[in-house]
Image (tube, rainbow, N blue to C red):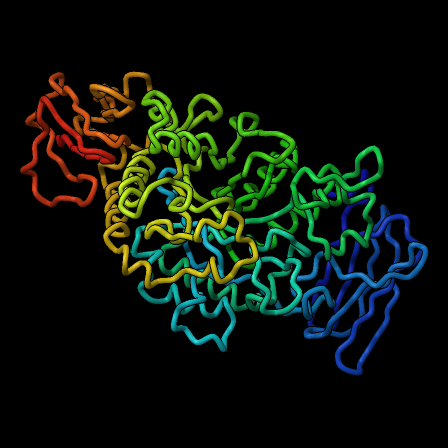
Length: 567
């Protein structure tokens, strides 16, 4: 991609390119008078002019390998500004200068991410996983995570096969120990120095792959942090403004990026390719993707899939400006499904309908999705209240409602996502927005011991989904006859029979759910009752096959039950 309509045969590689005896520098700075690069280390300093080569590009090559040196571009527009290279692979300190690094692509480890139909994601924050572990804190967060994942760990034990890290690139940070979610980005190639070095992150990805875990990065291209140097490079060109000349705020975080600008598009695509090439990550989740515009998302898909055909692309398909899930239905994009989130929540609270529950469990096909694996199904993420704080009731009610919710989530078509700690009833003491509250966010693994029964219940559901019978839930598109609903004697309680039409063979699964505070009865006389045996109730999974389905079946309050009919 070129930032402007250009007739030149090639576009220079932006940023720094190293050779054994030389270092090349290139930047994009249209409509400026002069550009230099200042290279420095300790009391050593060299200033070299760049040459204008066309269409706003500037380049130079200096006859020395400057690995380990810091550098800044000096731009006259018309007054002098020293600016951090937006293509810098690493920063000296937050907001200080770029660092010339000896970063090479790692060897191909042969890892292949699970297909979308088999993907089970856990959304995590780098610090939260290790903050309260016994892993020594005199090493970087990336190194602590490598230790965490090198041994048996609760994420892997649960049955997760993909880890989605909240943003890891440089963000507005006042000190190396600043806790933040990372959604105020300042640079798009450079990993945050608060977490570690590029080589340490390479080693972490290799460790995760060795454990069978795909790596998805949460990326933020819809807006910029207040310390983002693009504001100084060319604010008018790179950021959206309203008719009064003020920067727009459809993200709720200020500084909306002008993604329709060719250079911004190039920066986005180049930085994504950088993480595929130099770290071998498996995919990306795009924060507030609606603000990038659909045509830009299609360009991203084209460029990334040309490099890595099975790259995982996930959009948060909304902003304060609108919602675009329906516009992505004929693409390879998956989307966070807020309809699933809200419909399941209202159903569990006793305010939903069986028909709506069945629809969202089918992946919301055909509206807004073309196939179920475009739907990322979830009930909790970093935003807003955690699940255990959002639902009502005492501790026992929360536990029972959570077991019902997970049964629904894991038997739904689509891509299930679990928030960190959700499987052991993590609470943030009803604080809604904890973006900078490290003490509330760090995972207390002692709570897992307290709620180990819920963790094991969720683990068994994931194991069921990964088993052969899981094919009954992982359906790309289902016909109206695929599911059969059984209504309870009263309320919205329901039984959902999967593979009712026998299109997936002779196996069938029956999920029965009662979200109400009273017992309900069902009439299952239309089924071959002695062929169905119970594998789970609201508390546990069973290993025997002695509990058979009865014609007049009663389900206790706030309960679920699972039955299987085998071949």
